[in-house]
Image (cartoon, rainbow, N blue to C red; front, side):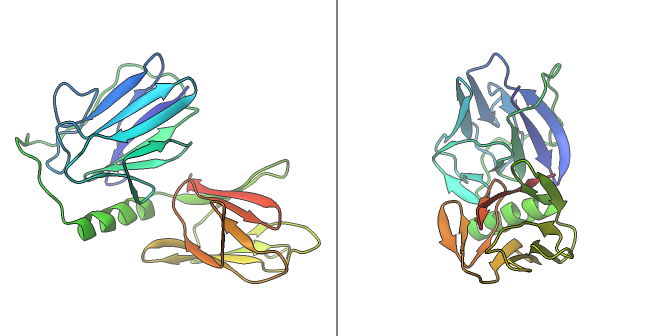
Length: 227
C-alpha cells in the first residue's frame, strides 16, 4: 500500500502510511498530518489527496513553492518514486509501500514562528542536490527487466555486450545512448541511429533526467528513479 517517506539531507526522518486516508496536509502547523518544523516550509504548504489508487499533490499557495522531480507544481498526479521537495525536505512517494506502524518524525530543534523566504535559484540548487544525494538507477521494463545503478561517470546503453544496459533490436546501435553524471544530476545523450529517443513523450537528443522520467529507445521502455 502507498506511503511517503520524509528525508532531510538524504537521511530518512519518518514514514507515513497512506492506507485508509483520503487526504494528508503537509506544513509547519501543528494541525498538519505531516509536520515539518522548518522555516522554509509554510504553515500549510501542500496537500496530498487520494482517490482510489490515484494520489494528487496540491500546492497550498506556499511561500517557497512545491516541487516534484525538480519542477514547480500547483497540482500534480503522483507517480511511483516521485520526489516532492518542500523547503529543505524531500518526500518520496512509494505507491507500493507496506503498511506502517505509528508515524514518527524528527524535527528541527528550534521552532520557527514565521516562514523564511528562500531565493528561487538557491531553492532549485537544493532540489538538484537532493536528487544527486540519492542513489539513482535505470530500469529496463518488460520481460527482460534490468536494474542498472548509476554509479559510474558514464553509463552506456546499447546492444554491445560491453554496455551497462543492454537492449536488442534490428535498429539498435552498439552504443545507442549515454547517461553522464553532471553537476546538475544525470544527462542522457542519444548517440544517433535510425530510431530517435523519446523522454516523457517528447523526442529529444539529450535531456537532464528527473526521478520518474520515462525514456523510450528503439521500442524499449526505460525508467529513471531512485534505488
